Amino acid sequence: MIVYLINWNFDEYYYRKFEIDHLIKSGMEVQIISIGHLFYKKHKKLDQSDFTNIKVFSPNSLFSLLKYINFIKASNAKFLLVSYVHNTSFKRLFINLFLKVRKIKYIFIFNHGLPSGEEVNSPEIQTSLFLKIKNFAVKLYRKDIYFLYIYSRFTIPIVSFLSNFLSLKPSFLLVSGAHHIKKYQQSSNIKIIPFNSFDYSNHLLNLSSASSKNKDLKRIICYLDGAQPFFSGDNYILGIKNHLTVDKWYPALCKFFKKIEEDYNATVVICGHPQTSFERYSDVFEKREVVYGRTNEIIEKSILTVTRGSTAVSFALINKIPILGIISDEMIATKVDITSNVIFNAINCKVLNIDHFDISNANLLEFNNDKYEAYITNFMTADNGFRPNYKIISKLYLNI
Image (cartoon, rainbow, N blue to C red):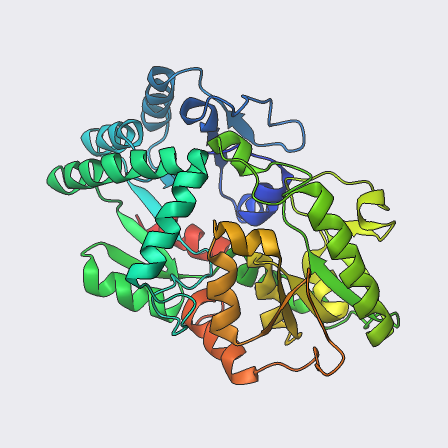
């Protein structure tokens, strides 16, 4: 049996992302244990098994979680735990200590497909005394961020020390990207197994059908939407206020859409974030179409992909679609998330501020193919067999 232990609610998005249907078809028995509600007060415990035939267990307490894991171990001659419970808090540390005591094999997965930041040579990312002072001032202004910052600065070093002292390590670490694999091989004695980012693995699964699809005659510009600001996403659960406002973000965004639609004779299609639920033709986007669950398909048909930092931009890299990064005055003011910076700088794509932009002399359909190829190799895959993730996990399970 393969058991996924996750920190969030399990839904159809993660059912596809984890390639559960492929695991089942290959003969694997799969269960999900969802425990986000044990860590975050605002994380609601939900019935998460309506859409699929696999069991999703949501324990009422930490004790019931450990009891259930014991039950699985006693009921199965062999099982592999795919854990997303990393040693970042005392409660998570206790769970992993329990796994060690019970001699349960578990794996961690590091495959977000992103640069870490330190390997991207950009003046915007480089740390200086001025930037440290500035960022600290931002944290003081944003009290919700500041308290999390203080808590993490106090907790994580202690938890890290205890984790090393107790030698709480997974049996295997599945890592995507040659850069990250090399880094972990140099700094860890855990067995490293090459893996794919979720999006790259999804691409491998769709290779056979993608070749038979014809390009849509309609010129499409794909916009990869985020959860904020109309929906709160993970920020609500974590107790963090949105750094974008509805009244400023969406009018500026739609004004920008109108301009690029006119200049490139194309239609913007919004790929909705899985934590949102817009109507198909939402007033928020001035009646532009919003689609869900078809991101790879829409990007493949597009002439340009626009993003403020979504990891789904990897589909554009794979399909060699030009990428345009967007920011806003509010994003610049808060500097909450550097995800967009590390992506944009790694692929050397154009970045526009939607509050102040001029595209009259810009060719937004250019891209650096060498940068795309390097990004895919360094951060998205390193499995030379071109196997999707479910095959890698299945093989690992059969060999333990």
